[in-house]
Length: 138
Image 1 (cartoon, one colour):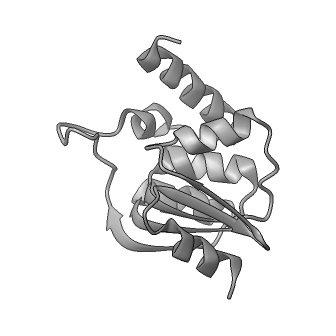
Image 2 (cartoon, one colour):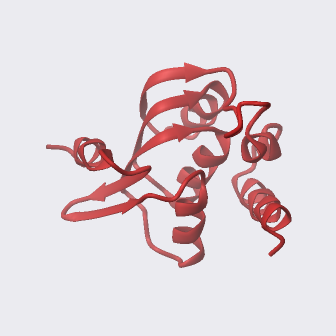
Image 3 (cartoon, helix red, strand yellow):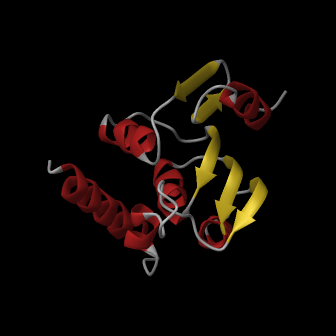
């Protein structure tokens, strides 16, 4: 069983699962928060495979920054596919969407919108951190 297979199996009942060898990381938090927290904690994620329910460009940028080896998504935006392809990260997905919608279904995901025109990974990370601070008041 590959790390990606293990991540996909581990996704059941969770929002995200990362796998590398015997290590399995799962979270039930929504959106990009699990990855933002792992990156803030300086967790070494190089070489991990990740399975996520929804992958927009924001999540893809965080996966690239973390150095993941492969990505699986139940639903992935086209901009996420584009940037993962550009950075040479293999991905599979069940469903494709033009853009990821917000949780209320009234518009687009604010995190994906924050980085839509951004192609620089470090700048994207800073934009996402600023957007989270803005929306949480932190």
